[in-house]
Image (cartoon, rainbow, N blue to C red; front, side, top):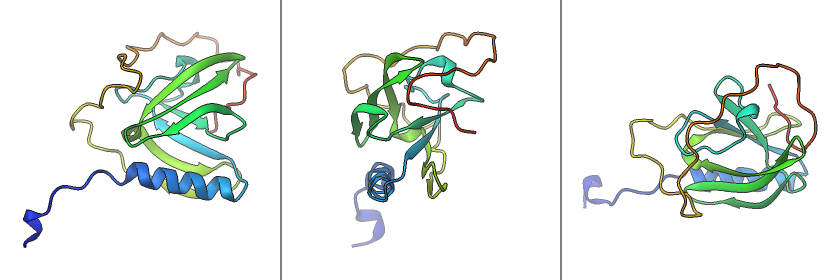
Length: 149
């Protein structure tokens, strides 16, 4: 049986994400995820996006209902004191690392010409174009999530 006869395997990205997340949290460090916010299906508050990317704190103390699924990462988080439902296609994750020491894993950007992300887990459509962020560049305070440069 040649290699061409073997069925295509699913992406290893969600499995690696869960393993790195567990490794970081088991070492009592803070897991941060770097997301390509321009990818279709990413649902985050527009004001937290910087240069087309967003860093999200996935620590259990910072989020609720975290689900690291095979196609989607979803959770509830507070930004500036307001609760938001966050939805990120696994394909949009660029890195998962420990905030304290930077150890973790970077992921290659997946081909954006590939098939679009699956329907969100809640059955609804992903959010459309984000609202433009306010023009003020004042740092925002509050909530448990911080933007990390």
